[in-house]
Amino acid sequence: MSLKGFSATLHLGSLRQWHWVSSAVCLVGMLLFSVTGITLNNATIIPATPVITSIEAVLPQQILDNIELSDADKAPLNAELRGWLESELNIYIAGSVRGEWSDEDVYVALPRPGGDAWLSLDLTSGDILYERTTRGWVAYLNDLHKGRDTGAAWSWFIDVFAIACVVFCVSGLLLLQRHAASRPSTWPMVGLGLVIPLILIILFVH
Image (cartoon, rainbow, N blue to C red; front, side):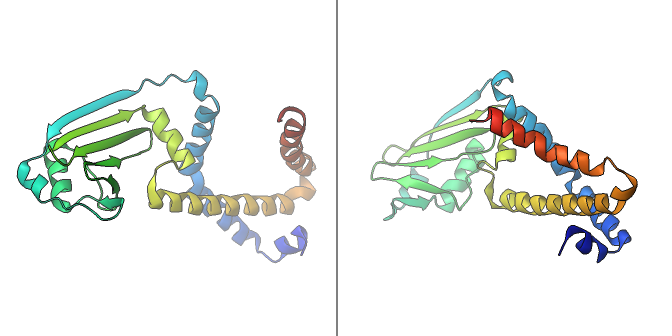
């Protein structure tokens, strides 16, 4: 079915409704991804000073004695240990996060948007080393744009947002087709949106 034939099957009011609803859903996300597209494209000229927070502590012997070595190379920390870390050191580790276990220690990688973190626990002495690095709000928003270490919920949001953007663009294209007869510059302008990036790719992207 041609674009003209497809658009004819849709009532003009329905097209406008799909267009404005999808635009409302996309508005904040599109602003976020547009701005972070600029910051990502110019990351080398945007200053970012990492802030490193380090914590050294000793786990109470009672909690240390209750830790059972895992047979698997990777396994989560028990609830008692995670609860102590959160209440005493303000270190939150989700129950789904798996540590790397050995006979001597356990290492937990804690990547996050806009930074990184890790924790190491000596299973003999109870010595805890924790380090968190943050690179500021620009880095945080950039990582949201890339979906870096953002979890399943944000990944789902990106997919739903992308679908809403497709609806916004397709409904807008169909509306353009409806009004193209009275606006002669419509298709030349749409064509420029295709030709300009295509020329740039051919001539300058290697």
